Amino acid sequence: MLLHEVRRTLRSMAREKLFTAVVVLTLALTIGATTAVFSVVYPVLWQPLPYPESEQLVRLFQATTPGAGAGPHKDRTRVSLPV
Image 1 (cartoon, rainbow, N blue to C red):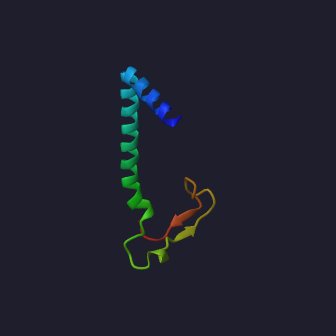
Image 2: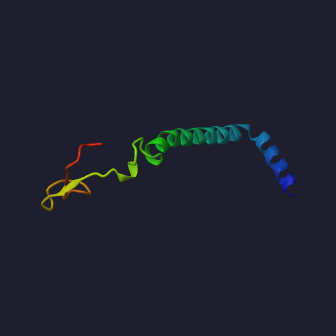
Image 3: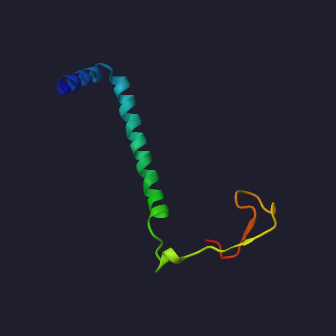
């Protein structure tokens, strides 16, 4: 049954060459874009930092008066050096 479906699909793809080309091109571009994004994001977000005992690194903040800044962390000021 599965072999019959595969043959029918291949015959349909042979008849509709433009549609098949668009689908293959779309898949190739999407897979390429996903690979490129993953290649950039993986080393930045998921690999550990190249420091000894990097799990002990911290970022210090100082509480400020409410409403002093902007953004989601508007009630705090960075004390440690910027990363």
